[in-house]
Image (cartoon, rainbow over all chains, first blue to last red; front, side):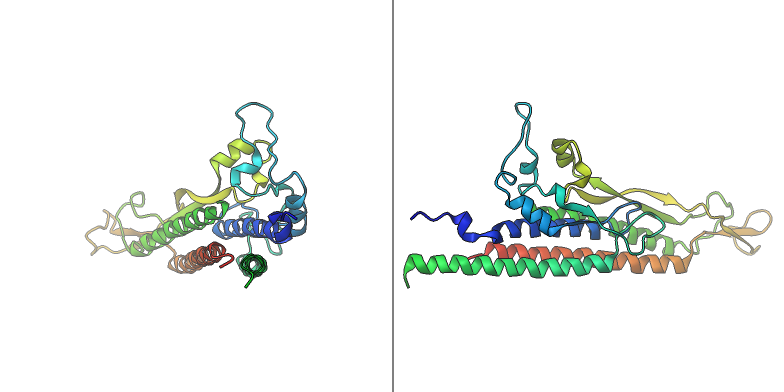
Length: 136
Length: 146
């Protein structure tokens, strides 16, 4: 029976991509902590994972004219634009900035731990596979 | 690999915050640079930050580039000079004093500058932490399966 590596790795591979994009979004918020009128954003993880995991979303490039570059390929990851939401500010500042550095730091730490957990899952699955291959 | 963009974003944050620290240093260093003319006296400078869209992403994504993951970073839009009036004081012994014996000191608010410095320093540290954490995660990803 041939082994489909994508199926074997399960949802973890998709989750890793979404978590890596969430790291970018949170890094963005932290970089713009003092930018006037910048609105903090975050990824709705459940929606993003559903979108990334759907059959055609991650790799299909809808191009209308020849030579056009598809959206999903631009960042190399799955297109999760629908799951990207503006954060509801708890205490917006007068300059229109809605970044709360403490909340973003907490979210970043949370995302880091989740990323590491996903890596551990992936790693153990690959180790299982290696054990099966080497038979030791 | 898309994760490397974090280094660009955090790097842009570091650069912007270091410009802010530089202006604070400049303002504090010139807090007592008096002048005989209120128009030429040193004015407090402050950077204005701006979120920038990644040019490539904005071009290829068209419709709604603002809501794309990680297509922004930060940059310094410009440096504005404070328009607050410089304070005037009577000091006829000062060689820089004007005909009336007055000198003008810069409109630098030292307390404001110090708090600005703390804020910039914290934001800088945040960006460094983001970079360090991302680096650790990327290294862990490289070692996946071993």
